[in-house]
Length: 561
Image (cartoon, rainbow, N blue to C red):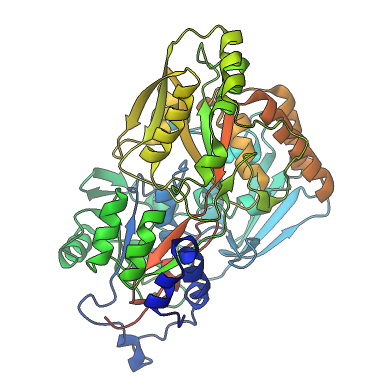
């Protein structure tokens, strides 16, 4: 951490992010627990003009306070602070570890999962987090919701179907005693433990599900969790936002008095919605933000000049081009193959739109999960072959709508407008008539993609919500097939085999077969495995980066202003 700013600049932009990340490993490590204010005078060391307030500049807005049925990374960025899951994520390995459940036992046949909950845990609404409350959460996840017409069900993605339906692998949810919950499966699910670490399986107070809060966006559902933070009241939000005068809108969190662990040093926390890359950089350089996420390459030099440290995350996401197979043109495999040969993916990876270390993607599963199939079909850049394929398809210049988000960003897609422009240019060169359809930041992009029947193409990314190939493959192939209208019964049978496979090698082999089928069918074209990064200012002494974006602000440590 002793690298000087001038020395860092001397390294050149090609190595700048890596150097900044390498010299700040102590920023990533969980800090030792913060003493309570009554126990140590050092607890006031973080006071100053901004005191203990932490301002995080995010590229997108919070779409819901309730993580149930959500898939959006910006919702999870905030919900992870308020809610906890039965099993958590080890920050070093990414494996499942105890969280709300202090123990997790599985029978030899893999069908019964028993969770022993921590004693004395309460939600921020002062109701107990006991086995009955957790069972109610599981039943809520398992029930069909009217929103699933346009939103995939996380429960169906993991368990196969809704509770009571033929394909559901969950047979029953039982409360054995006050602190013990038992899930009985019809067949083993190899991915279950990892899946239960995902943020949409957060546990919330059943008594709070009908509770609403008044926000600038209107009245919203506001469940209570067991985490170190709770949702700020309207009065608390107004006070925090007034003190941070540069922040006009954002989610406000305050330390929860009912949390069982150490009180977070940073409170309140303001997660400001600054969609534009330039806006986040400007507010950071003005000292209005302590952390900004989704750093793009052009920001590196001004960030280092302003005294920031850039913290890279290990890659565990994929950016891809989705193709609507129900579209009269995109339904042709020849056209989809033409797209695959027309997009210059190697050039995209090294275009300067992504941080160094970003690589071209062949599969929808990041290489770190170890299921790549080297024998799967590969599509090299070949504009001539692409034009020949379009001729075979009988394409006659029909307009093709291409959806992409604007005024926002994601860890796996920092500048969507520029990525769209580059891909659209490539596709135009092979003769496709691309019609841009920008989707503004105040719209639910994922919902818009699924609801717009005339779409042909769309930009989309998938982050690893849990560290397992199932998290990347299953939604595309089955539970969220509405995104591309892809349906291959053979692939769906292979997914079932992967869920049952007891042997790791056999499971990897099955996933490899699925990737081979996806490469032939081409419902999506994998583009790149993006490297993402956050930047932190001088006040931040520890910040927990995670490939899974499992980043908890209770671990942030602040110095004096």
